[in-house]
Length: 387
Image (cartoon, rainbow, N blue to C red; front, side, top):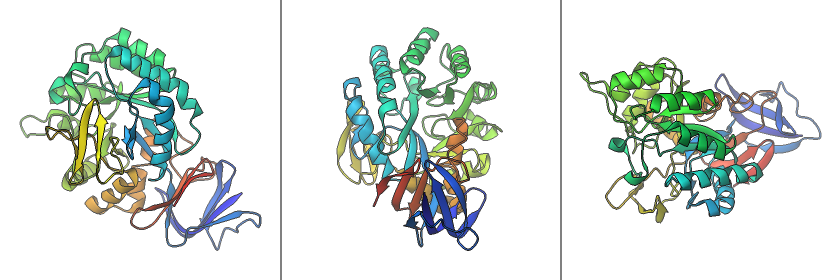
């Protein structure tokens, strides 16, 4: 048994000063104020004095961290465990990995190798599965993706990917204006995959119809790689703002999205439907250097990762920094900001035993200071990172 004491426990529903959180094995046993909840005599004590104690952070859209990403099927067995260890340094306890894409055969091999390796990752953050971003993206909003890899979906390709992933395919980004998008989105939804609208230059009507269909559950990096809002042409962004059920991912780094735009999204969807993500490239958590992404060299310049033509190459954001940014950009409380990086991603994936601090939940816990610096990351009751 373990007890984290003297910290400020942060949940979406309450903040407990001078808190104590008792862990029994892999789950949370109890939590409360130190005066009201006695610490078991045999408990291992972890002193979090002056720091926040929060649920573990869940990143549902990331490619890499500290120079590591999934670059080829034959390297997955080495790269995925390294990525899991690296993201834990920044408070991530669970994550969906986004693999690099290529042609159809490459993607199938990548998914099959991930399915073989994912169950064996035991150190660091635990992967929850795969978020496949591409190849079913609108060429008019391709972002950093090479155009030669993008095409319209087909049911046969969707079945091939689903079979290759062996049950680990959790989220697929799909542009709704592509041929066959409607039937493929429905097929994926019926097979338990969360379909995310993204990378599309479509109009308001098409986007609204997709979001209202029930087949789409969320939107990939709101604002980025989509048609914007104009008072005579509301675009994809207008459809997102108008939806009363959809979740929206946000890269809250102040670069991909202006702080004011982040604040607008929080107000439009509410902090219970925004999900903070990193969309981190291999440069995630780095402050300088270069790396290879999608067979292109990206360089970190002035706090951003860019391709030679100036295109943003994902982000170098970490999820603990996204939580800090959300507070600063919109004057949110720590509870509101943490919810968008823990409870919300867990709920959209249908995971009810993680993402929050309450008795019986998985003991995925982060201890961080007022500036978001992580001193301890715990997954299922085991310490996987300690500063």
